[in-house]
Amino acid sequence: MRESDIPLTAVSTPSGMLWEWLVMPQGLKNAPATFNRCVTHLLRSVRDFAPSYFNDVCIHSRAVDGKSEVEMHKEHLHKLFALMRKHKLYVNLKKCILGASEIPVLGCLVGKNGVRPDPGKVE
Image 1 (cartoon, helix red, strand yellow):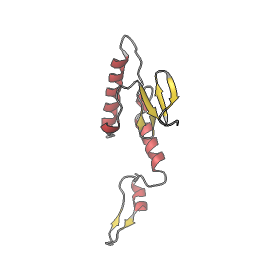
Image 2 (cartoon, helix red, strand yellow):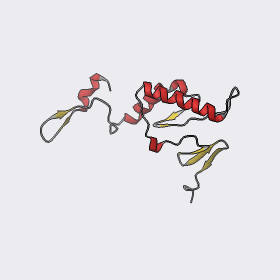
Image 3 (cartoon, helix red, strand yellow):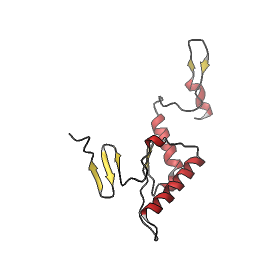
Image 4 (cartoon, one colour):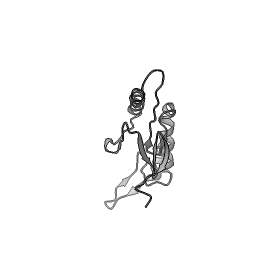
């Protein structure tokens, strides 16, 4: 959050204290767009294999230069996690799906063979 915007987030508590946010809370109108822009900007160097959509990052890997898909995927994971560590971005491991051939994205299953509707969502 810009220093000049901090006073705009002031909240008065019942005890009479005045609190100001030092980081952007998720309840502000432009918080999702600002967060998305920040993540997209910070991860731009890996967008060829790890595009981001708000707080989701999907890594896709192919066999290249004699390296298998698994080797390339491990290399891509290492690059992404190093970049995230550098910029102090964190992941919730419980929400991570690592090494999958197909993943759920926005109500669809996305994989090597393309995009198909998630059977659990189509009933």
